[in-house]
Image (tube, rainbow, N blue to C red; front, side, top):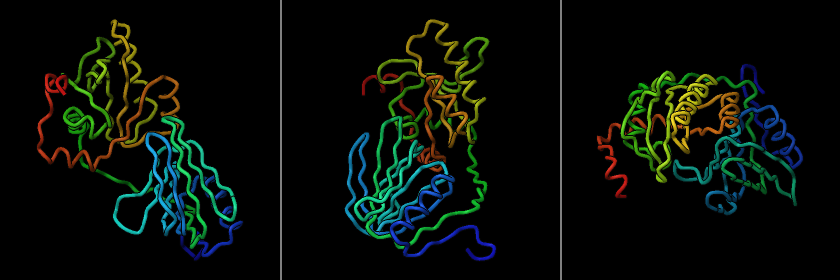
Length: 263
């Protein structure tokens, strides 16, 4: 590690050395980049296999992982919010296993050769700003629920009042007709955002609404907030602000309730 640099690079490590470096980085939750001759297998909501070839594997501090090939900007595999990361030496390979609990997903990366591993020793998280208001994000979700939240929802109204609990950002229904309340945040969501959503959901249930779902939509969420969210039986949807901006610029119209029911 050179003077002033914030990362360590290990070039052409031996198998045991690569495993040790990766384990230390994962245990310390330090971002890392690995380049090597690797293959990747995924099972979860679908299944895929990337044959052995030169790959770039990126593991971030929160456990999310991205596997890139040699062409294109889209990753071959990616997995957010990893619950468990295992690193071991198996049959002359470095084997990394990334497990996500909910929904259940497993990504396994096997590397026959490792060209280098770069570990960010003192990562500095710079600010990132996408100049969108929460109202604009809310409009995008109402107009493009599948593109933003990943499922078909319909929102006949915005900012519905739930008596003394306040105004919910979005109140709508899923494809099974269940009520859905969405709380929108334009920055990383904390515990207070979860508590706010929980108040809305509980009030809706107390008003006789059955099967009410609560979704917190934000670019990111803190670990404490995610833990509270899961204990409360609520859901999190990570929103891509750049994608939201593109959808709003497209000028497409939102679907009506009648169009949703007919689809």
